[in-house]
Amino acid sequence: MGRKVAWPKFFLIIVCFTVIVWASGCSQSSSGESSDNKLTVWLWPGMGIEDQIKQYAEENDIEIEIQLAEFNDVHNNLTTALAAGSGAPDVAAIEVKGIVKYLDYPEHFYNLLDFGADEVSSDYFDWKWKQAMTPDGKAVIGLPTDIGPQAMAYRTDVFEAAGLPTDREEVAQLIQTWDDYLEIGEQIKEKTGKAMIDNASALYSVIEGQGKEKYYDENGQVIVSKNPQLKKAYDYTMQLIEKDLSASFDGGSTEWGTGLTNGDFATVMMPAWQMVSVKANAPNAEGKWDLTQIPEGSGNQGGSFLTIPKQSDNPEEAYKLIKWLLSPEQQQVTFEEKGNFPSTPETYETEALQNFTDDYFSGAPVGKIYAQAAERVKPVIEGKNSINIEKIMTDAVVRVEDGLQRPEESWERAMDKLKRYEELDN
Image: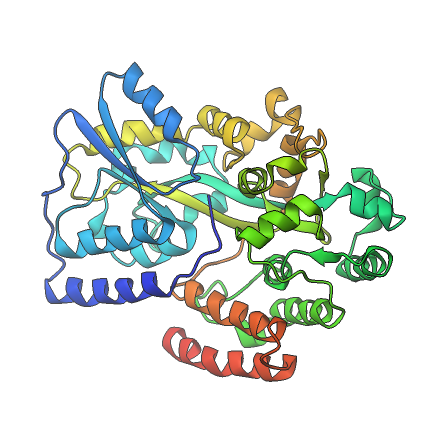
């Protein structure tokens, strides 16, 4: 359910939220628009749980209104409603990087521990559960939806044209390191003229997330300039750009969809939820892509939570809904129908998930592949300014890919911008 998005507007509204809350003394209001027999749920497209919500409503004889808005709008509207003291829904989705900000204001959400959420905590990855927990451990403001373990989709006809194996196990053995990845990329470029990847930022994002730490350490200190994993990610990405192995297509764009269809690039670093997007953007490429593990471990991109704002008049009913909706059984249904991968590890050993395949990806056992990827994820700590730091680092890559700056200059520019956050958080 995660997405690569532009966050600055969301950040600005969060800042305004901070000022308004401070000025109003964090006043609360129960002026949400729900009634005794109706729930309102805010989601963004692609979360994949709408049909199950409708099923729950029918089976439990309750009216549930699903309001869909664009990703940023859901967060912006929620922030505005919380600051204003009215207008929030009974259930609101919040993405993983956004929830860090909201944890500064837990009084605006129901503490799910008060509804017995501790009884289901063991259903989820411990690291995922803690992402919606206040630092003192006394409150949990959301239940986890999916996670975004990453695998590598590859174009079998491009690999074959380059004289490379196409069997997914052989491809995994062929590309075990990022050095291997660049070397194979050069071979593909030489033999076929095709790029190795859709865009350079995608490679950077994967590698930066493979370390034990990313932007913050366990003490909440910003460590970007001191973290060798980020420099490793940047340096490999610069090699990719220098060797002209990126197609430079923005994910989700028309050009990206055309590239997926035509095989203009050989690989896509693909979190589980992106399977749906790939199919939607390139329906005529079915059977031309396959799936295997990415080099040097896995990574996680995205993942969300369902929360219950304090403005809800029906928190007990809202909790019953999200508890059922995000149970291991229902998360497996979501994966099988929509591709969003469960945050409930007990699901991974079920026969249904282990044997789940996808014809679009050449019959690959996508359930098994993503389960293995999820088990390989090294959880990283997110901080208050992760959204802004991520944009600074991604912008540094884009400037080089667009030919606006040399690698060294762009890196130094990013480090200068990061000093602000090191001063704020350290």
